Length: 263
Ligand SMILES: Nc1ncnc2c1ncn2[C@@H]1O[C@H](COP(=O)(O)OP(=O)(O)OP(=O)(O)O)[C@@H](O)[C@H]1O
Image (cartoon, rainbow, N blue to C red; front, side, top):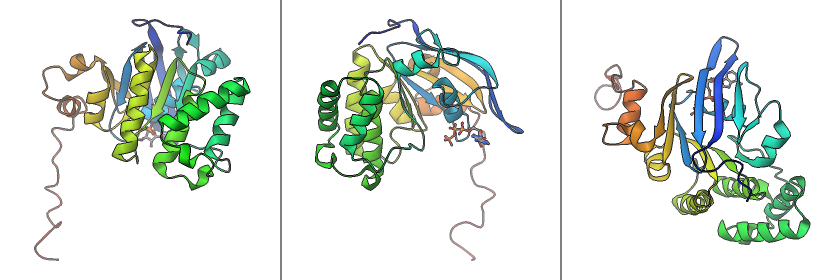
């Protein structure tokens, strides 16, 4: 793997990023510096702007304002260089689902310009590690949610990217598949690569990530190592609730009609 940024350098640098959809401000002037070689969690409540941010960082959605650099290349001025160095597992993953899993990997590898023999070798290994060998000739349209995530992950890893972006990679995935995905990602970051993933599940982020950015209402509320973001709080979940201001929310006194009693 040729690493464009060593550990300690920035894998992703975001300056003054904005995105509006009509009246709705989805991302309101974000500055971020994500270090290379880390397992990075982007966390935030529903509608915080995580998907919009990841889409702009990976060149899928043009920002209204701001700059994004990935391993030293400007995403919008030098998109080919960036796309060659990243892998993406987007939200609402769309795959060529009339292909079998094996064909999908073959196609992805050739699109990435890898020689056929190398694609075959890597595809067979990824299918094996992700426990998809038995389903490799089945059409992707017939895959379960977890199998789709795993084949999407295999396609995103096939060209050995420097930075891997994953939007909710564990959503709808059973614990066995989650453990498999986790093992692959840990091995990948141990070799110096960077993973950036979004999630709502704080326990997962706390157990996997060594660096965290907290997003709420389109703004960054905190970013840093897990310890820095956790601060004095006993868990990331507690720190998160404080940071997004959810601790003061009255949970349910208005729902006095809900549950037992008169119906
Ligand atoms: N294409 C769009 N058109 C209009 N509004 C949008 C669009 N995409 C996102 N938004 C709005 O932008 C805000 C941020 O959405 P986004 O999907 O980035 O949040 P998120 O943090 O990924 O949320 P979730 O965790 O629920 O997936 C939301 O208010 C959403 O309704």
